[in-house]
Image (cartoon, rainbow, N blue to C red; front, top):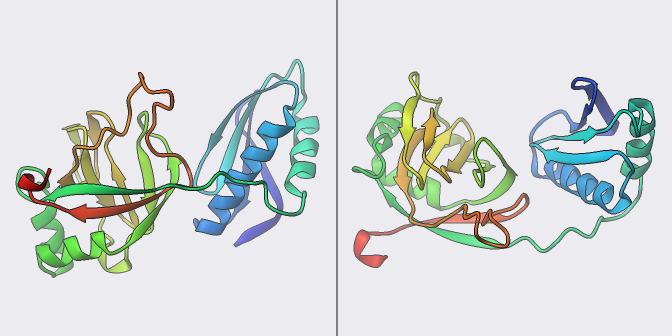
Amino acid sequence: MLYATPVFRPMGDRSLLVELGEKISPDVNRRVQELMLRLEQARLPGVREFAPGYRSLLVVFDPLTLSASELKARITDVAACPGSAGLPQAKLLTVPVFYGGEYGPDLEGVAGHLGISTDEVIRLHTETIYRVYMIGFTPGYPYMGELPAALAVPRRSTPRTRVPKGSVGIAQRQTGIYSVESPGGWQIIGWTPIELFDPARQLPSLLEMGDRVKFEAVRQVEI
């Protein structure tokens, strides 16, 4: 559900969390994306940074230049603007994935938890086109959804201290790709060779908020 007006929550003396909806949904997430674009275009003095999330936008500002009350008023005005903010065209990325075995050590456990075959897990994971809701956790890490309800599983009870770069994980109604090696608690069902984050690229993150991703099961000889 979209809120009629933004809900503001102070996050310290120089950050303001702007909530735009009660639950995670593509519509709410698109509103977050539009609000961020409008605020970037408005170039409000004192605003330093934006951090978009599933249903909210964190705005970092300089309180010596712009007070929190002034910022709330400006954001409310910007959010009330009718029409589209002219979002950039979302790209669709097909991601090849090696499922199971050494690449997906949790695939069999996920199948057992759900009471289905590993082939069915792969089918369910690859039949959906996912929205990139946000980039976070580590540089270039895409949080994507929503997984089919039949594939919803909890996070691991004990997180791993090391998850290889390129690992494809699922948890609850989300799926993601580990853009760099890091600790992690999601169920790892596969691995992709795609380089999601490269600081040498003009745009270091391959994916952006609003992009779409389709997973494709492959065998090693196909890469």
